[in-house]
Length: 262
Image 1 (cartoon, one colour):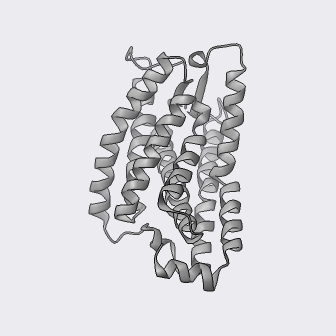
Image 2: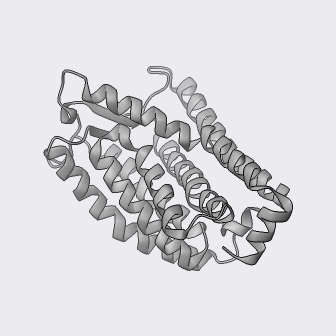
Protein backbone atom coordinates (compact mmCIF):
# COMPACT_ATOMS: atom_id res chain seq x y z
CA UNK A 1 0.00 0.00 0.00
CA UNK A 2 1.39 3.43 -0.93
CA UNK A 3 1.83 6.25 1.56
CA UNK A 4 -0.87 8.21 -0.27
CA UNK A 5 -3.37 5.39 0.16
CA UNK A 6 -2.39 5.04 3.82
CA UNK A 7 -2.99 8.74 4.35
CA UNK A 8 -6.36 8.46 2.59
CA UNK A 9 -7.48 5.68 4.88
CA UNK A 10 -6.17 7.48 7.98
CA UNK A 11 -7.07 11.10 7.30
CA UNK A 12 -9.93 11.05 4.81
CA UNK A 13 -11.97 7.92 5.36
CA UNK A 14 -11.86 5.62 8.35
CA UNK A 15 -11.28 1.91 7.93
CA UNK A 16 -14.82 1.26 9.09
CA UNK A 17 -16.26 3.61 6.48
CA UNK A 18 -14.06 2.12 3.74
CA UNK A 19 -15.20 -1.39 4.71
CA UNK A 20 -18.87 -0.40 4.73
CA UNK A 21 -18.46 1.38 1.40
CA UNK A 22 -16.87 -1.66 -0.24
CA UNK A 23 -19.55 -4.01 1.08
CA UNK A 24 -22.34 -1.71 -0.13
CA UNK A 25 -20.85 -1.39 -3.62
CA UNK A 26 -20.51 -5.18 -3.86
CA UNK A 27 -24.02 -5.71 -2.47
CA UNK A 28 -25.36 -3.49 -5.25
CA UNK A 29 -23.36 -5.22 -7.97
CA UNK A 30 -21.18 -8.29 -8.27
CA UNK A 31 -21.45 -9.43 -4.67
CA UNK A 32 -25.19 -9.83 -5.19
CA UNK A 33 -24.46 -11.59 -8.48
CA UNK A 34 -22.21 -14.04 -6.61
CA UNK A 35 -25.00 -14.93 -4.13
CA UNK A 36 -27.44 -15.32 -7.02
CA UNK A 37 -24.99 -17.58 -8.86
CA UNK A 38 -24.51 -19.80 -5.81
CA UNK A 39 -28.28 -20.18 -5.42
CA UNK A 40 -28.62 -20.89 -9.14
CA UNK A 41 -25.89 -23.54 -9.01
CA UNK A 42 -27.57 -25.17 -6.03
CA UNK A 43 -30.77 -25.36 -8.04
CA UNK A 44 -28.91 -26.90 -10.97
CA UNK A 45 -27.26 -29.50 -8.75
CA UNK A 46 -30.62 -30.58 -7.31
CA UNK A 47 -32.44 -30.62 -10.65
CA UNK A 48 -33.32 -34.02 -12.18
CA UNK A 49 -31.24 -33.45 -15.33
CA UNK A 50 -27.45 -33.72 -15.36
CA UNK A 51 -25.55 -30.44 -15.44
CA UNK A 52 -24.45 -30.78 -19.06
CA UNK A 53 -28.08 -31.21 -20.11
CA UNK A 54 -29.05 -27.91 -18.49
CA UNK A 55 -28.38 -24.54 -20.09
CA UNK A 56 -27.13 -21.19 -18.84
CA UNK A 57 -28.11 -18.43 -21.26
CA UNK A 58 -25.99 -15.28 -21.02
CA UNK A 59 -27.83 -12.91 -23.36
CA UNK A 60 -31.36 -13.99 -24.17
CA UNK A 61 -34.51 -12.39 -25.45
CA UNK A 62 -36.34 -10.26 -22.87
CA UNK A 63 -39.51 -9.83 -24.92
CA UNK A 64 -39.86 -12.76 -27.35
CA UNK A 65 -41.67 -11.89 -30.55
CA UNK A 66 -41.53 -8.13 -29.86
CA UNK A 67 -38.17 -6.97 -31.25
CA UNK A 68 -38.47 -3.25 -30.47
CA UNK A 69 -39.52 -3.89 -26.89
CA UNK A 70 -36.77 -6.49 -26.63
CA UNK A 71 -34.19 -3.95 -27.81
CA UNK A 72 -35.50 -1.36 -25.34
CA UNK A 73 -35.18 -3.77 -22.42
CA UNK A 74 -31.65 -4.73 -23.39
CA UNK A 75 -30.52 -1.11 -23.66
CA UNK A 76 -32.15 -0.38 -20.31
CA UNK A 77 -30.41 -3.36 -18.67
CA UNK A 78 -27.02 -2.37 -20.11
CA UNK A 79 -27.38 1.23 -18.92
CA UNK A 80 -28.55 0.38 -15.39
CA UNK A 81 -25.83 -2.25 -14.98
CA UNK A 82 -23.28 0.54 -15.35
CA UNK A 83 -24.68 2.55 -12.42
CA UNK A 84 -22.39 0.85 -9.84
CA UNK A 85 -19.42 1.99 -11.93
CA UNK A 86 -20.71 5.56 -11.70
CA UNK A 87 -21.08 5.05 -7.95
CA UNK A 88 -17.43 3.96 -7.74
CA UNK A 89 -16.41 7.06 -9.71
CA UNK A 90 -18.40 9.22 -7.27
CA UNK A 91 -16.86 7.56 -4.21
CA UNK A 92 -13.37 8.07 -5.60
CA UNK A 93 -14.16 11.75 -6.15
CA UNK A 94 -15.28 11.97 -2.52
CA UNK A 95 -11.93 10.45 -1.60
CA UNK A 96 -10.21 13.34 -3.38
CA UNK A 97 -9.14 11.49 -6.52
CA UNK A 98 -10.97 10.13 -9.58
CA UNK A 99 -11.56 6.92 -11.50
CA UNK A 100 -8.32 7.68 -13.34
CA UNK A 101 -6.46 6.42 -10.27
CA UNK A 102 -7.62 2.95 -11.32
CA UNK A 103 -6.10 3.41 -14.77
CA UNK A 104 -9.37 3.88 -16.63
CA UNK A 105 -8.65 6.75 -18.99
CA UNK A 106 -7.52 7.50 -22.54
CA UNK A 107 -3.93 8.46 -21.81
CA UNK A 108 -2.41 5.26 -23.30
CA UNK A 109 -4.93 3.97 -25.85
CA UNK A 110 -2.57 1.99 -28.07
CA UNK A 111 -0.66 0.41 -25.21
CA UNK A 112 -3.91 -0.55 -23.48
CA UNK A 113 -5.30 -1.99 -26.71
CA UNK A 114 -2.16 -3.99 -27.42
CA UNK A 115 -1.86 -5.40 -23.91
CA UNK A 116 -5.57 -6.18 -23.83
CA UNK A 117 -5.43 -8.02 -27.14
CA UNK A 118 -2.47 -10.12 -25.96
CA UNK A 119 -4.21 -11.03 -22.70
CA UNK A 120 -7.42 -11.91 -24.56
CA UNK A 121 -5.53 -14.11 -27.00
CA UNK A 122 -3.83 -15.96 -24.17
CA UNK A 123 -6.96 -16.52 -22.09
CA UNK A 124 -9.68 -16.94 -24.71
CA UNK A 125 -8.56 -20.23 -26.25
CA UNK A 126 -7.66 -21.89 -22.95
CA UNK A 127 -10.98 -20.80 -21.49
CA UNK A 128 -12.90 -22.46 -24.32
CA UNK A 129 -10.96 -25.71 -23.87
CA UNK A 130 -11.61 -25.67 -20.12
CA UNK A 131 -15.34 -25.15 -20.71
CA UNK A 132 -15.58 -27.98 -23.24
CA UNK A 133 -13.63 -30.30 -20.93
CA UNK A 134 -15.70 -29.42 -17.85
CA UNK A 135 -18.96 -29.92 -19.74
CA UNK A 136 -17.82 -33.27 -21.15
CA UNK A 137 -16.90 -34.37 -17.62
CA UNK A 138 -20.35 -33.39 -16.37
CA UNK A 139 -19.20 -30.49 -14.19
CA UNK A 140 -20.64 -27.65 -16.25
CA UNK A 141 -23.92 -26.53 -17.70
CA UNK A 142 -24.18 -25.95 -21.43
CA UNK A 143 -23.44 -22.26 -21.80
CA UNK A 144 -25.50 -20.47 -24.44
CA UNK A 145 -23.82 -17.07 -24.89
CA UNK A 146 -26.66 -15.72 -27.02
CA UNK A 147 -30.20 -16.76 -27.83
CA UNK A 148 -31.23 -13.44 -29.35
CA UNK A 149 -33.42 -13.53 -32.46
CA UNK A 150 -31.77 -12.87 -35.80
CA UNK A 151 -32.68 -9.17 -36.00
CA UNK A 152 -30.66 -6.14 -37.09
CA UNK A 153 -29.70 -5.12 -33.56
CA UNK A 154 -28.48 -8.53 -32.40
CA UNK A 155 -24.76 -8.00 -33.01
CA UNK A 156 -24.67 -4.39 -31.67
CA UNK A 157 -26.45 -5.47 -28.46
CA UNK A 158 -24.05 -8.39 -28.02
CA UNK A 159 -21.05 -6.07 -28.40
CA UNK A 160 -22.56 -3.54 -25.98
CA UNK A 161 -23.24 -6.34 -23.49
CA UNK A 162 -19.65 -7.50 -23.78
CA UNK A 163 -18.33 -3.99 -23.13
CA UNK A 164 -20.72 -3.50 -20.20
CA UNK A 165 -19.64 -6.77 -18.58
CA UNK A 166 -16.01 -5.80 -18.99
CA UNK A 167 -16.29 -2.30 -17.55
CA UNK A 168 -18.41 -3.36 -14.57
CA UNK A 169 -16.25 -6.35 -13.63
CA UNK A 170 -12.83 -4.80 -14.14
CA UNK A 171 -13.60 -1.45 -12.51
CA UNK A 172 -15.29 -2.99 -9.46
CA UNK A 173 -13.58 -6.35 -8.87
CA UNK A 174 -10.12 -5.51 -10.17
CA UNK A 175 -9.47 -1.79 -9.71
CA UNK A 176 -11.80 -0.57 -6.97
CA UNK A 177 -11.89 -3.70 -4.79
CA UNK A 178 -8.12 -4.15 -4.80
CA UNK A 179 -7.62 -0.46 -4.00
CA UNK A 180 -9.99 -0.60 -1.05
CA UNK A 181 -8.53 -3.85 0.30
CA UNK A 182 -5.03 -2.37 0.12
CA UNK A 183 -6.25 0.71 1.98
CA UNK A 184 -7.76 -1.58 4.61
CA UNK A 185 -4.35 -3.15 5.17
CA UNK A 186 -4.85 -6.46 3.36
CA UNK A 187 -1.73 -8.12 2.02
CA UNK A 188 -1.49 -8.37 -1.74
CA UNK A 189 -1.91 -12.21 -1.82
CA UNK A 190 -5.03 -11.95 0.36
CA UNK A 191 -6.53 -9.16 -1.76
CA UNK A 192 -5.75 -11.06 -4.95
CA UNK A 193 -7.38 -14.21 -3.57
CA UNK A 194 -10.51 -12.30 -2.49
CA UNK A 195 -10.90 -10.59 -5.87
CA UNK A 196 -10.36 -13.81 -7.81
CA UNK A 197 -12.70 -15.86 -5.61
CA UNK A 198 -15.42 -13.27 -6.08
CA UNK A 199 -14.90 -13.33 -9.85
CA UNK A 200 -15.18 -17.10 -9.88
CA UNK A 201 -18.22 -17.08 -7.59
CA UNK A 202 -20.46 -14.91 -9.72
CA UNK A 203 -19.80 -17.25 -12.65
CA UNK A 204 -20.77 -20.35 -10.66
CA UNK A 205 -24.22 -20.41 -12.30
CA UNK A 206 -22.38 -21.86 -15.31
CA UNK A 207 -20.99 -24.74 -13.25
CA UNK A 208 -17.64 -25.77 -11.83
CA UNK A 209 -15.84 -25.00 -15.09
CA UNK A 210 -17.16 -21.44 -15.05
CA UNK A 211 -15.98 -20.99 -11.47
CA UNK A 212 -12.49 -22.47 -12.00
CA UNK A 213 -11.91 -20.72 -15.32
CA UNK A 214 -12.84 -17.30 -13.99
CA UNK A 215 -10.92 -17.87 -10.77
CA UNK A 216 -7.80 -18.52 -12.86
CA UNK A 217 -8.58 -15.51 -15.04
CA UNK A 218 -8.91 -13.38 -11.91
CA UNK A 219 -5.53 -14.48 -10.59
CA UNK A 220 -3.86 -13.67 -13.91
CA UNK A 221 -5.58 -10.28 -14.11
CA UNK A 222 -4.58 -9.42 -10.52
CA UNK A 223 -0.97 -10.41 -11.13
CA UNK A 224 -0.75 -8.25 -14.24
CA UNK A 225 -2.71 -5.39 -12.68
CA UNK A 226 -0.15 -5.17 -9.90
CA UNK A 227 2.51 -4.62 -12.57
CA UNK A 228 0.56 -2.28 -14.85
CA UNK A 229 -1.75 -0.53 -12.37
CA UNK A 230 -4.25 0.13 -15.14
CA UNK A 231 -7.75 -1.26 -15.49
CA UNK A 232 -8.05 -0.25 -19.15
CA UNK A 233 -6.06 -3.18 -20.67
CA UNK A 234 -8.21 -5.67 -18.77
CA UNK A 235 -11.42 -3.94 -19.83
CA UNK A 236 -10.18 -4.28 -23.42
CA UNK A 237 -9.26 -7.94 -22.93
CA UNK A 238 -12.58 -8.79 -21.27
CA UNK A 239 -14.53 -6.99 -23.99
CA UNK A 240 -12.69 -8.93 -26.70
CA UNK A 241 -13.18 -12.29 -24.94
CA UNK A 242 -16.90 -11.76 -24.43
CA UNK A 243 -17.40 -10.28 -27.91
CA UNK A 244 -15.85 -13.32 -29.54
CA UNK A 245 -17.91 -15.64 -27.35
CA UNK A 246 -21.21 -13.83 -27.94
CA UNK A 247 -20.87 -13.05 -31.63
CA UNK A 248 -19.03 -16.29 -32.44
CA UNK A 249 -21.78 -18.36 -30.86
CA UNK A 250 -24.50 -16.38 -32.63
CA UNK A 251 -22.83 -17.03 -35.98
CA UNK A 252 -21.58 -20.60 -35.45
CA UNK A 253 -24.24 -22.29 -33.30
CA UNK A 254 -25.78 -25.14 -35.25
CA UNK A 255 -23.15 -24.93 -37.99
CA UNK A 256 -20.18 -26.62 -36.26
CA UNK A 257 -20.33 -29.97 -34.50
CA UNK A 258 -17.94 -29.16 -31.62
CA UNK A 259 -20.00 -26.27 -30.21
CA UNK A 260 -22.66 -27.46 -27.71
CA UNK A 261 -26.03 -25.75 -28.15
CA UNK A 262 -28.03 -27.34 -25.33
